[in-house]
Structures are given as structure tokens and as C-alpha cells.
Image 1 (spheres, rainbow, N blue to C red):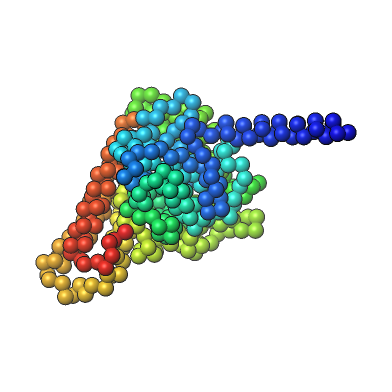
Image 2: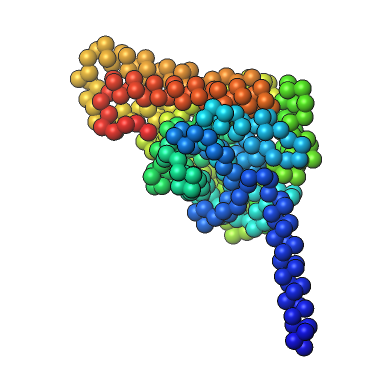
Length: 382
């Protein structure tokens, strides 16, 4: 009997080892799964200059952060923006929210996960990377596509973590403003309570095909993309007013407002934007500067208002200079990129994107300095 008991223990250990190996095998080189803010987090850190900021990449709908660093069989590091950001001296951290990919990485599902959880998870992962690698507490956050909705949640959570969020950059992203997407949309729900939007994958693959053509080679093959880069996700992040409650999707637009909180302009970080110029991503090409310009200028106005400066007592020339500065923000703090929704993949686009981040870094710093000269703010603007 004891012999059979030992044999059973051995079998259990072997099965556990196999399952553990399978889980590890699903990870790309350099990836880790940690627990941040109570949720499993797929991350990849790449060191740069420890004195430079940590650039944190937040992916869009139904994608993980691999879209910024690659790693599938046959991929090339220099086809992804992480490689070039590190070449510019930045440290890089890709942070993926819970997502079910065909090749499993995070096996459990979290249908109640929302934007407040998202912000806390990203900020906690950033703080962990900073502490582990002895970096400064300065971070720059990139929000791609749906990732734009994370701006305010991350900003609040970053402050709680003691991080200095220098600015948030949109990559073809949508801010958390109600009505910028179809608020009557409905998505199928998986058995685990996640949103299934696999019907939009062909649209994404068409845009990746354009980037492949622009770069003269395959950046991400279709099989790798469908198996390792995309999957079902918590519906609460989507921004279409749908929320998971009691085993079903319900429409609650106000819940979107409360979770994304883009209206909390005084808590938003400074905003910058990189915008596509291809018709395959027409909505972002045509509207991103206006959408993010609205957020930018209201954030700046809230910062000025918080300073309690009596603008009516300001010399006329200074007041007019302030008007010019604030009105210039949408153009000054945005850059047009060559490409579509995936303009930052492929060596040419990835390199151009990393240089654009450095340019925006300089522009945001210059803008803050000019604002400080015109309006004696009580604290350095964030």
C-alpha cells in the first residue's frame, strides 16, 4: 500500500512538473509572471541607463504587451519599439493585463477586473521594476489603442506608489471619453466571462500586413499573432459601456466614466500623442490630435486653476503668452508617424517611434518649464 502511495505521489509530482514546464514554455525570453495589485501580471523588463526614466508600455484591446517587444520564434528584436527605446537610453517595461491567449500564459480569468485595477496593477509593476533594478522613480507611460483609457487610473496609482509620471503618450489611442466609440456595441461573452472580439482580428492583421510590406519582411506571422499576441479579455476595459455583473454583460455608461475618470483633469498626467497617417487607421489619423488635444488643454487649465494664481492680475503680455502656450499644446505635444495602428512595429517604424518619444520627452519638459515661467505654480506640474 505504501508503495502505491509513493507511486501516486511520484505521478502527481511529474504531472505538476509537466504542467509547470508547459506554463513556463508559454513565456517568451525575459518574460515574468508576477502578482501586482492582486492580479497576475505578464511583464518584460529591458534595462537601459539606470539614470533615465522607465518607459512603461500598456497594450490595447485584446493584445498583450508583446506587441511592443516581440519574442515569438523567428522574430527580430529590432522590429519592436522596446529595442529602440533602450537604444535611446530608456529602461523598458511591458505590462499586460489579464488576457487569455491561445497558447496560455495567464490561465485564470478575472471578468470583474476594471480600469481601477488596471491602473494599480501597472503602477505596482513599475514600482517593482524600479526597486529591483535601482532606477529613478521617473516613468513615461505609453498607452496604445484602448490603453489610452488607462491614463487617469495609472496616474492616480503612480502617485500612490511614489512615482513621478513625467507624461503619458498616446499611440493611436482613445481617451476614456464616452461616445468616441459605438456605445451600443455588444460583444459575445465567453464561458469564463471574458469578451470575445476575435471578429476584429482580421482588421488588425490587415494593418500588420501593411507594416510587413513597408518593412520588406514579415514582422509577426499570422500563426504567432493569433496564438501568442491576442486573446479574450475583461469587458470592463473596452470602453463601450459594457460591464460584467452577475455572470452577464450589462450596459452601464456611467461605470465607464467612474472607472476611466478622464474628467478628473487635475489628476491627469501631462499628455502627448503619436498619431498614424494611414487610411487603414483612419479614425485615429483624423481624430487623435483633437481628442487628446481636448484632454491636454483641460489638464493644463486644471493645473493653472489649482495654482490659485489671479490671472486677472497678470500683465497683459504675459496673459497673451499663456494663451498662446496653452493653445499650442495639441500641435506641439503630438507627432505624426508613418504607418497605421501598428506604426511602431518593424525596424523603421520602431526606430522612428523611439526617436519621437525622445522628442516628446524634450517638448514636454520645455512646455512645463515655459508654463512655470508664466504661472508661478505652487508645485512642479506633473
